[in-house]
Length: 91
Image (cartoon, rainbow, N blue to C red; front, top):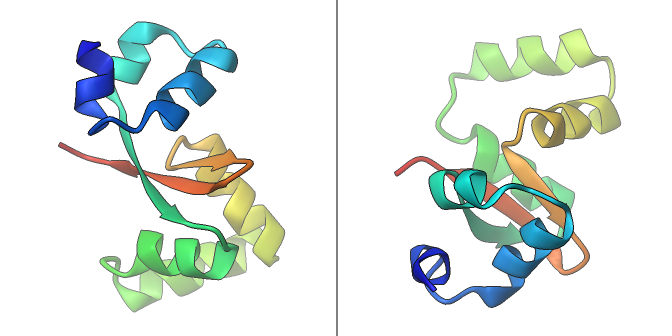
């Protein structure tokens, strides 16, 4: 119940994480909020506070769009769910 309150009642994301065997301690200490249903808007949200050079360097280093997006997923910055993308929020 406390975890559900942390996620402002978003039961879907809590269940999604539990179904993917994410430990309750991680669910309680890493907060995700729904971001978008499409990749472009999600990438924009993730990079809008970064400096332009860092974003360009990262895209160049990755080589393609899919690798960039997958990098954010692997770093835990994005959760890719069937209903859309959730962005990690630093509290």
